[in-house]
Length: 133
Image (tube, rainbow, N blue to C red; front, side, top):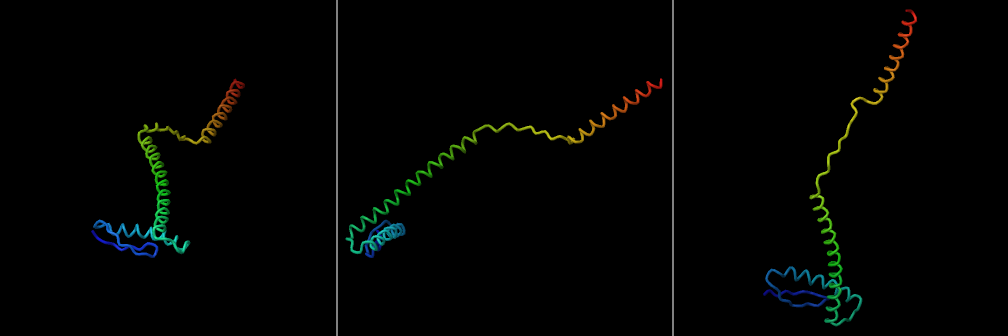
């Protein structure tokens, strides 16, 4: 078992760990040292056990906060996954029929006006032919 020297709150400690876990131990010790350094700056003379206890509690508080946020994120993720599954299972919407006029309305209006004029002219010509006959 490898022995690793870690530094926490300005003090050195020899700690054993499993083979290959040295990096994780160093990372954990670094986090604990950061919290212990804050305590050391605030309270100059703090017994070792008390400093480690307080630093551990501070890390535990941060961990609890992260776990709460993780639970929230996991709940939101589950909600979104359920929504996505529901959307995937839903039947495809019916296609909409959209009709686009081939002849613009103004052309139809103009043709209707021309037809009305032609009928009026035809009526005038009929009246003239009947009057001459």
